[in-house]
Length: 319
Ligand code: XMP
Picture 1 (cartoon, rainbow, N blue to C red):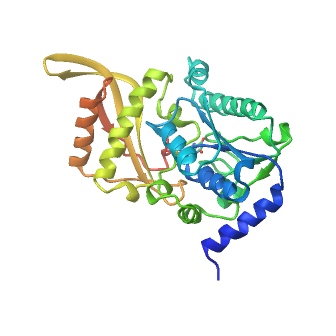
Picture 2 (picture 1 turned 180 degrees about the vertical axis):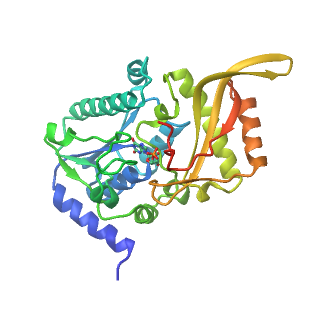
Picture 3 (picture 1 turned 30 degrees about the vertical axis):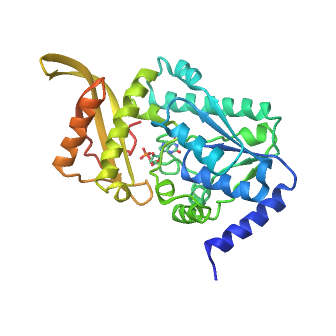
């Protein structure tokens, strides 16, 4: 009979067979898929694996530290963290078109990754957390087969250019099975149950121009919102929840002062696969609590609104 423990053993044997004495490099995103792939591969071949995590400055609060703690301290997996914030912020200056943002981030990510791979002396294999749905449907996240609504972010083209072969140990699995395998490998429920986070990160949650200052404001608001969701016990009932920072300023009043600051939109949806989604129907008291806390605790925001748009006609992300 089929168990995740048996699957793990089979995959470990297969990875050893495939890789031999070769070197493997794995790009971590901080998400569940690439993390589970890396941990499984490390179990199979130990320090023939090196992980690379690119900090593009578009991550959520404390995300980089969480990845460092998990991989270095907990699993003892060799990890290179690249501080590329300045490079990404400089490149994003003046860019407001959503597709232009995505194209720049995807291209720059590959460039940074390639440089690091070269510094490490190259590798024979590139590991990826590709899942079964990605294999059968290599179309865009939102579109039908012939329309690209949003260009997707991955390291396409890199393996050929650098003459690397692919190691994709999750290719037969669905998302819920990856979570189960993650638990089997010792990841806790909180980690494996994390909401999806897009490759272009906070850049597509800041309509208009992205800057470090705007990312910092958004990170704080997003952390407050998610803390309230966890405290209310709602995290696992929601597919994805996040804050969006609007490039619109409105007038407010705080104490005796007039304020003129950004609007923050809150989004939360339920979904099965991300292809369609419904808004999460928070009660009004919950939303008021989030609004009050965000306005009081986050300098730069003085108004909070809730996004009531389902998918379709909206997409889950704002860009
Ligand atoms: P949309 O906004 O298209 O998002 O309704 C559907 C799901 O896909 C995620 N998403 C991405 N994930 N790279 C990713 O890895 C991307 O470029 C990307 N764009 C959207 C989004 O967060 C949601 O879960």
